[in-house]
Length: 258
Ligand SMILES: Nc1ncnc2c1ncn2[C@@H]1O[C@H](COP(=O)(O)OP(=O)(O)OP(=O)(O)O)[C@@H](O)[C@H]1O
Ligand SMILES: [Mg+2]
Image 1 (cartoon, rainbow, N blue to C red):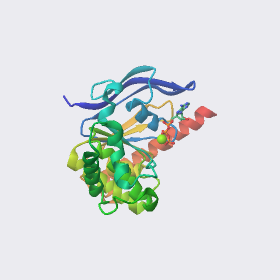
Image 2 (cartoon, helix red, strand yellow; image 1 turned 90 degrees about the vertical axis):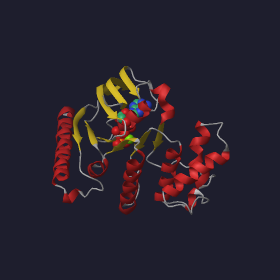
Image 3 (cartoon, rainbow, N blue to C red; image 1 turned 180 degrees about the vertical axis):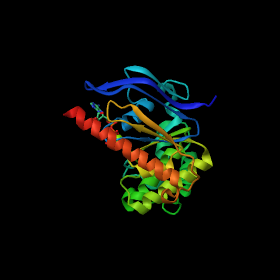
Image 4 (cartoon, protein in one colour; image 1 turned 120 degrees about the vertical axis):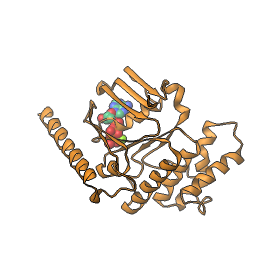
């Protein structure tokens, strides 16, 4: 049996009286790269908060490595849409900050050694003493990724981490992420509303409807990496399917509103 990293089983969640999920079910296998794709406001970031034990659900079950999120949060690391660096700490101390928060008895030397290694991996070996203000947007985001990886998590939760970057930097970081995932075998759950990003990255794409979110389609992608969407008919077909799903759900939403 394949080990599950994350499982949502008929999860119900209402926020401020609004149903976000009525009975949402999906799972992510250990070592898998899954993209959660869906329109703005459908509950993608909320799903990451639930997995990270930042938000309780009202019904159904959420399991992380077979445990309640409250027992598994230390196996996770988050990368948010904006890097959220501390402006008074340099790149090295920012990258070490997650360890400082999570593993209080680790020595500062050990924390810095781990953080430095991750920064080097992200191509920032010569920038470790720069303050955030001296770094470009892409460099800051790479510090945030290094901070997450320094925790040595089993599962990395990423919430549109590249959306604020220019197209070249975005493409480079996507490729670095795929390399890193292939090297380390970690589980990645990556939130996006960009169809091509999902096609480039994922083993499986879980497409969500507008809220209350349900899974409208799960699309497995087996193309070898690095991927060239234009050159691969299967990926182009998957792109057409996903765009059509978005069209259909948007039309349904308009009809519901009228
Ligand atoms: N604390 C809260 N109280 C009330 N409603 C909330 C709360 N947090 C989130 N919501 C609502 O839940 C819905 C889902 O929010 P979420 O941030 O998960 O969307 P998303 O899919 O990540 O969207 P986007 O792609 O725009 O980031 C939104 O309609 C949002 O307004
Ligand atoms: Mg969001």
